[in-house]
Image (cartoon, rainbow, N blue to C red; front, side, top):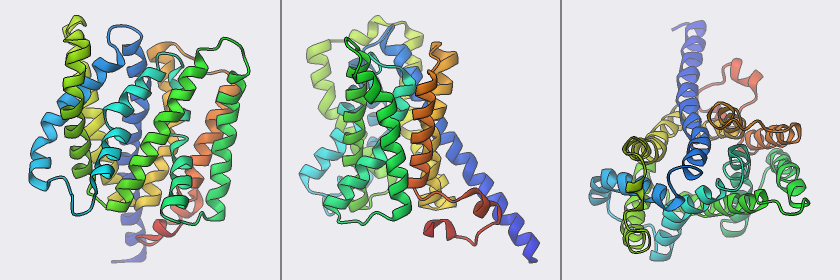
Length: 316
């Protein structure tokens, strides 16, 4: 095969991986405005957590039965951290934040800040060193947080600050999950099954005891939609799509697509919620987006279109 044909095949492979990555982050970004619309109208964060993990737990139960709890790789407390960090408790905290603050803020302060928390935890728990280029990215993330959350905190009587605190807490919870997942090296679907089934088993009795069947008070169409979106699309499909992107592009390049979440969440919130970010907010969104991209080790655009050899993005 000629060099031109090889380059064409590599470019096509990149585009296919990029489509998978864009599809995954579109779902993540859409979760913010869709969840905010729901928790400010017909359902509560508890209802959404029940619908999400009740559905996903049932669908992923065969996966857990087949692969088990991975106790050869995980201790019991690590299993608990996984379920809390990415399961029903995480969903409750993140969705509760959306009752107080805009979806655009959630996009910045949860998936946007999570890499910063992961880096701090990894340096402490796993003794990983942070490359200089990534430090620039983390600095931009911190700048974006200050622009969006710091300035709001200075204003009196702002419920938005409560949402910001909850978003940052959710980001820290997911970072803890990420560290455990990285150390255990579990397959994504296996990890999702542990989280989903563990959440369903642990949260369902609590929900029924405290909330009864509150979610049944919502319109049937809303219940069906949230079961599909929260339980299947956001919890299972996005994981598969992101896994495909990583398998095609490599871990660093695949993770770089997460940099699109803050901006995409802000853009989607405009037609869904009618929430338009201020000029200051857009500055914070751009700073965090660029910071996440640099911190993830994503490839520079000119290197991408020069068509690096397979696997080169892993060394960015």
